[in-house]
Length: 316
Length: 324
Image (cartoon, rainbow over all chains, first blue to last red; front, side, top):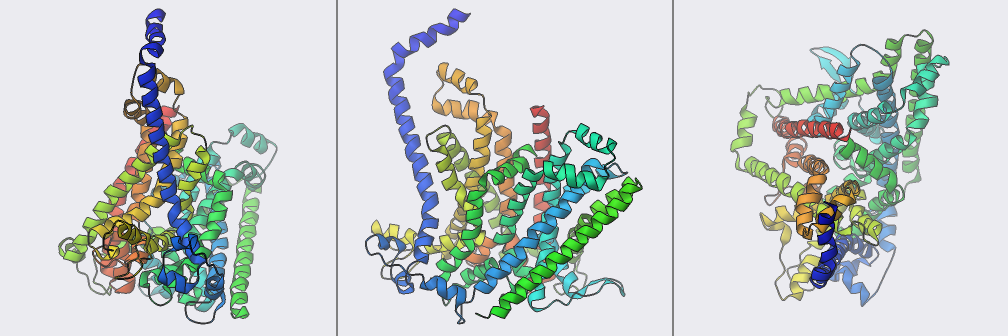
C-alpha cells in the first residue's frame, strides 16, 4: 500500500515538472494580478475622495482628482468652511458634536444593559429563563423599520390605551431631541448585544462561578468582580460594533434627530448627497470629516472587531 | 460658530451620562439588596428590567402596532383591510420597488460572497496577506452615506467639457461619450449595488479567510498530489470544507441588503426606477405621510427576513453540532 502511494509522488517531478511548474507560475501570476487589481480597485474610490477634499473648490468643479498628479494644488479652506462657516452648508462642527453626543451614550447604555441581561440569562436560575432568552433572540429578526413609525409617535404623542395615558408625550425640542436618538439606538442595539454577550458568558467555566458563590459572593458581586473582567474582550468587540453602527447611522438619526441643527453629521450628509444641490463641491471635505473617525478606530481596533464578527456570524 | 450651541450639546451629554450612572447605581443597589436575601428571582428581575422594558416599548409594541397600521389608511383613521397590500402588488411603482429589491437580494449577496471567497483564496498564505485584507476590509468602516458620496463622485456626469467623474473619464479615454449613469434605468440599479458590494466584500473576505485557516493543509496537499488542478481543488475541496461559513456570509449580506436604506436615499432618492423596500417604507411614511403604506412595506420586509433568519439559526446550530 505504502509503495503504491509513493510511486506516483516520486514519479511526478520527473514526468510533469516542466508543465506543472509553468502552470503553477502562470496561475500564481494570474492570482497575483487579480489580487492586486481588487486591492487597487477597492482603494481608489476612498483615495479619490480624500484627494478631492484637499483641492480648491474651483478645481473640483473643473477637473477630476487624478489631475493633481500633473497639476498639484491643495488647500484646507474647504475643511475650514464646512466646519466653521456661518454661511449655508457650513457649521457642520455642530453636527459633528451631535454625533459625538449621540454616540457615547448610544454605545454605553445598550452595552451596559445588555451585559446585565446576558448575565441574568446565563447564570441566574429563575423560571421562564429559556423562554425569555428565546424571545429576545427572536427579536433580532424584527427589522428596525418595523419600529420606526410607532416609536416616533410614542415620543411625540405618548402611549395611550383608549383614553388612558400610560405615558405622556415627551415633547422634546431643540437639543433635547437627542435623547430620542439615544433611546432609539439603545433599543435597536440590544438584541444583538444580548445574544453575543450571552454566548460569551455561557462559555465561562461554571466552577469559577460556584467557587465565588461558596465564598459568599452575591450575584451583583459575581457580575462585577468575576464575569465583567472575564468578558472584557467580548464587551470591547460589541462596543466597537455598536460604535461603528451608531456613528455611521443615517436612518435612526434622520428619523429621530429632529431638525437639521440637532441631527448627527451622517444624517445631514445623507441629505446633502441626496439633493446634490448648492455646495456639492464641499461634500468631499464634509464626508471625510465623518469618515475619518470610525476609520481610525476601525484600523486601530480591527482585531477586536474581527473577533466580534467571527463570534457573531460564524460561531453563533 | 456659536460656542454656546456646542456647550448646550455637551451639557446634555453630561446630564445624560450622570442620569445613566445614577440608574446603574440604583439597579446595582437593588440587586445587592435582593442578593443578600438570596432571592434569585428578584435579582434576575433587576438585571433584566432595563433591557426588557426597552425591548417591549421600543420593539415588540411598535412591531405589533406597525402590523395593525398596515391595515389602516394613510392617516391611520380608517380601516382598509388588505387594500395597502393590494396597492403594493398592483401599483406599478410599488411593483418596481419589489422587483428591484428582489434583484438586490440576489445579486449583492452572490457577488459579495463570490468575490470575497476568490479573493480570500488568492491571498491566503501570500506575502502581505494582512495588507491585502486590510485594503479590502477598509470600506467596512465607512458609513453607507460616506460610501455613497464616494461613489456619486465616481459616477458624476458633465454634459460637456472635462469629466470629473472617474467612470466617465475612463469612457472618454476610450473615445466614448459620457453617460449620466444614475439616470439610466436598470443600469443605475446595478451601479447602486456596486456600492454595497464594495462594502460587503471586505466582510466576506475576513470571515472566509478565517474559515480557510481552519481547513487542514493535508487535505489540499493530498488533492494536489492526486493531480487535482487548482480549480478542481477550489470547487471540490476548499468550497465544501468552508461551506457553512460561506452560507453564513451570504445570509448576513442578504439581511443587510434587504434592510438597505442609506445608499438609495443618498444616491438617487429612489428616483429613476431605483427604489427598494426599506427606502420606500421610509419615503411613504415620513416624506409622503402615508403611514399605512409605509407600515405595509415594513411588514413585507419583515416577512422576507423571517425565513432567512430561521434558516441562519438552523445552519448555525448544525455547525455547532459539527464542531463538537
